[in-house]
Image (cartoon, rainbow, N blue to C red; front, side, top):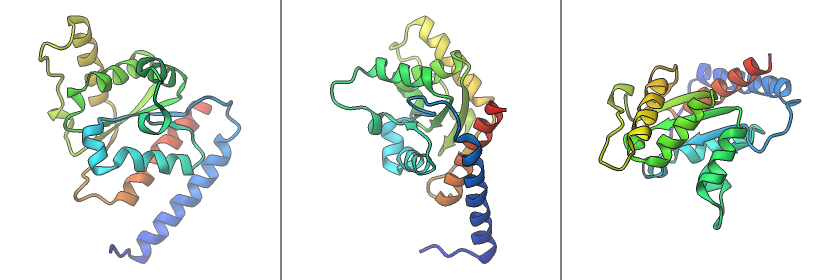
Amino acid sequence: MQHYTSSTCKNICNRILHHSKQLRLIKDRPSSPCDIFISHRGIDTKHNIVAGLLYDHLARLCFRPFLDSKNMKPGDKLFDKIDTAIGNCKIGISILSPQYCDSYFCLHELSLMMESKKKCIPIFVDVKPSELHVKDKGHFSAENLKRFSWALQEAKYTVGLTFNTSKGNWSEFLMDASDAVMKNLQEMKE
């Protein structure tokens, strides 16, 4: 069990109060199917539950996040549902993990967010930006290889968050991620 100092508890309480004030300012936004699209590599993030916890945390803050495992049902067409969610979202979150670049779907999602000029918050989980590379194993067309490499470079040179799942403070991570989302949404509103 993790114990917190009184200053840590006070900091968390202040951030929660700040979040509730920010949410009141953002609440009058027009309705859309989702506010935040979460791109992740299931093989990495299901093991350490980053994507699911982030989705649940943002949903509790009254946002409408999109996460494939939570928003899709059997019979949904992958590209239709995902491309529509990205097109309608205000902010994208890319949870960049060690095997993220091995997935066509992840790289497609990241590329679509970057191409549509969505505000994208990269979260580097258990990986340094310099360790991420699009690996051409003969599965990508030349056009997609160029597109994916460009999008990954854009993400690597965007200010984001880092998190180490074995050493990091999960509560602090969720607060940092929601702070980043709220600040960006507030900035967009203004």
